[in-house]
Image (tube, rainbow, N blue to C red; front, side, top):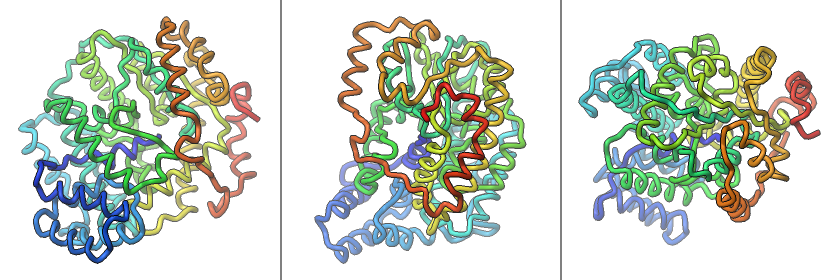
Length: 461
């Protein structure tokens, strides 16, 4: 997951004190989606809550991914004032955004100024999205503000010479089994796999219990409104999630374009050096490592797929794992997920536009990835997604030597229990259609044929 995106959308802090207007809103949202209230009464309640706290509603709504047609329309009308462009555009200026983060944290050190390049291109690309809804504007604004706060805090806490135990970093195409491998390996107590609640606000000094509760509350709202998203990517406050969220703190991350096809931002990203970004990524890992000194970090993100050369250079201690699945299956499955995410921030996401964007991402990442494997054939442990489906425990056991890991009987039992409790299709099968994407299955097969040939031994045919 990609859920790098799901996590971002529920990352905004909300006030949920008992008796507050936002508590009323949470209860209202639950009743609305469970059919316990009629639409007219719901609208009156929402208007009342709006009078108390429009900003609060904006923050809550930014934690939702996709809502029913009626509620999404109502939310966008309610948030329309937030979507009205201020002087100069729909988003605040960089200087204003930075000043807001400085006031919130009391910090002033922004580190390497190159992050401003990515932020500037991102803001410009967002201004060009023609069907970005008011809810989309609020969502992206809050994502950007949180990333800026995270940036100030990790620079406060980082120390370049801190130790970093050999982390295990998993990558692969989106929808290729990275999530299930990540979550199975996280059952070994020698690993710390940062959960969603930690990655959303990783360097806060607030109580971890509160941050976990806050994330759970936000997910509860999201699940009431997104009953079908779990079948595509299941996540909860305590599930390990993607370190793509850490890359966003340098403003060079797929986190943003996974919600909307930001072509200008993608073009900038693919042409920019990622070395400064991964230098900051290492520093963030060092801060997390210092908080878990007795464990190794376990991380995963498809975003690393095209950046393994830089990752190997900047984090030489890392043990790298790559999952493999037929790229055509990954392509259409990822397009489907992207369409679901896009409906949250855009009024009418185009399937053809999404498919074209995903094709550019896959093409760039796979070419760089194949080149890395040719130059460093023994640097990555390759895992077949098909093997994860049919013989997960054997795969885990086989990884022990490569990861300097002793896979104990207790951990194997936990993994077996996890697989029993989380079978494929637990929340319904994710049915992917090849239709209406503007590209045929045969064309996609041809586009990624070199990858399929290169890793033929790890791809089901």
